[in-house]
Image (cartoon, rainbow, N blue to C red; front, side, top):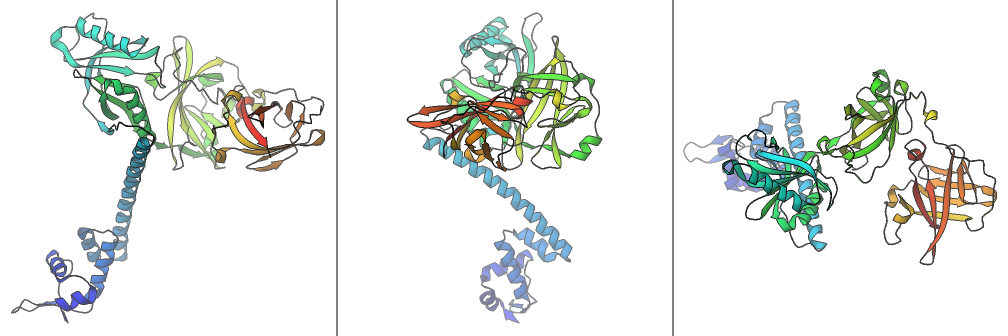
Length: 513
């Protein structure tokens, strides 16, 4: 048997700590002399000492260690370990988010910004308002309208705050879709001509600034959201206080993971929907349904799929894996699964519209993704039975005409929406994300393309001014430009978004290899 001081030396735990463990019931002596009060420990207690030390080094609290020591089976120990693992993983996620936020703030300052805005995400109190939504030339006009609403109402019911609900999705200075609002403390009188509602602020990212700092505050807000696990999911609120203080609130929701289904299950679950047959053209992309107004698009970059078709029987084409009532399925990088995008169809003022919740599965590396509302209008009622009815085909039977200037190997430099977007000083598209790596124009129209999937010299040929793809039935124009004394090759990229997605053409840019 060992006295407490001797055990302390053997296990390197201070005597004071051993007494504390005894009082807490973690490490109880084998014997206590009833006359002297000395504690005596057997050598077997070293095992418990080492176990306590090991668990403390793993981050277990004393309460958690007590549960471990009291465990009567391996199953109970495993359960305790699993609980701790889960807690540590959650802590790691919180720490990673904090680190990313601090890095974003640090970058904000190192890039020359002087003002720091403190953004928090909270649910806050509701606000009862009188309001008018319309297009205003600028925000000043909208604020004036809010004051006109206040002046038209009994003074006793007008609150202290004014608010603008900004339904725009991108930065604009003029022709703004805004609701001018006044806080009210009771129900509106009849026939005022104003709308009345209670704004329920759900989860919002909020910050405080001065009125003249709003532009910078929006930039800081977007930077904060982009560096977090949230995304914008609605119109923003600008709340004006009578002392010049302004509160910016932006509705946010946590990022989600796309909903996946196997291809076999997709095929088995097909349910017809006569409303969607035909051709649809995208008219807007918005974060939330409330921001959409027909004829007033909020999005300036309407990418593929520019047009959308629902082929009879839920058949696939291009990036569309199939469809069933309420769901549009899109191909994933995995061969045996597709992911769901839910849709609804509405008739609005004589226009048949389809609202598609579209996941951007490639936007992040952690499996989570942003989601937007893609709004399509039906342009054609025709029933399509196969993808070949949709394919846009070019003339490809051009004779070979030599072009000495184009011959040779060209290595990829960039990818742009239009030739005018190319800038020798920047990269529009990350090089690691570029699909095409190089092209080579050889004698007699032999054309070789090297992509991430390998090299192909079979499907295409070339003639002066054109690359002819026999498999995809496309004729892609090329042009050589000399910029700052250096030759650049601009080559049309006619992929599925051209053949099936509405005829949109992008450009690859190459330099001589």
